[in-house]
Length: 357
Image 1 (cartoon, one colour):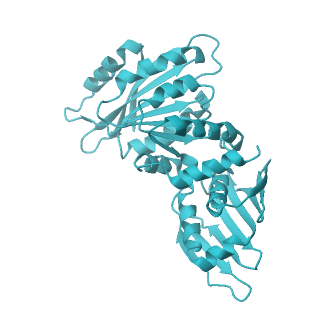
Image 2 (cartoon, one colour; image 1 turned 180 degrees about the vertical axis):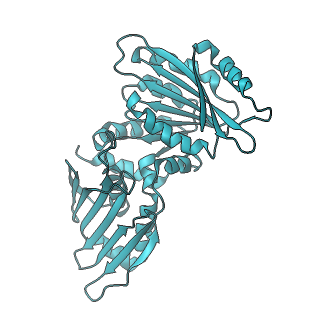
Image 3 (cartoon, helix red, strand yellow; image 1 turned 30 degrees about the vertical axis):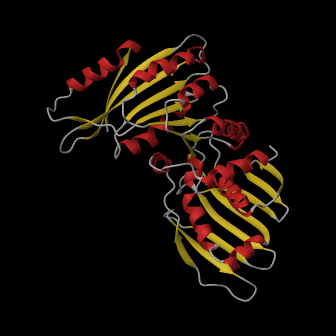
């Protein structure tokens, strides 16, 4: 992927993009866009991470991307604009798409909606990927809501969940579009696997006699400021919400989390697993107080999990189930093209409100 990047004045964004386009040598070049994507970053530390997940999408779905990078450490008024022409394919005909990047200080936040609104490509949907907490940027966040058809959140840590879930609760009261979350999408394969495991009334009855749940997820020391146990917490809360377990306590631990229910208890642990993606759920173990047990373990290829099931009389032969890949770029792509807000996701976030943070 080849980039042509230039810093420009706010008033010359479109003209500079046109100039770069005309400067390309190929007479058969194509500029493509399927949608508008706004990406809000809470700081510059997230730039590389965001570029990795968005470039994976643009290779298959070229679109206009507007990056909004807020610099909370800026000591003076900052408003810097760059435009980029990204070549996502060159064989046989070059295919390009536009990218606009605005870096600004909190004092310039109120100007941002007026700057980016003229640069939405008409008649195309507008999606918003919001990283971090929306509390500090509330005015910008609420102004952007009026123009977008789907909001996709990507909270970093368990510590950010209390305010994040409150924002979700407020957003659902006033927002008519769709709402989703990358952490929710990352566990889609595991949700399907567990639902298939308890697809009969007899097995569902055993899940009602809970003794304990244990989840193990992967981490990497090179990852920045993300919480590897976050997807596992989403999966645990989804299971609790669907089964209507009564939560008695929740504790955040250094390497994981602990949750107790009226029906039993659950733990989330973290393990070093450099070969798998950060935050990948490695194992899920569910035990009932009547001697039934279910153990699912992720394979090295991160697409299949091996299932072991046993009861007081026998152990079933192990088998594999498909859980899918867990990359965040794939997750973002699935959410952008999925219609509606998941009712299971909304019920899971409602459970977040009840946790004693």
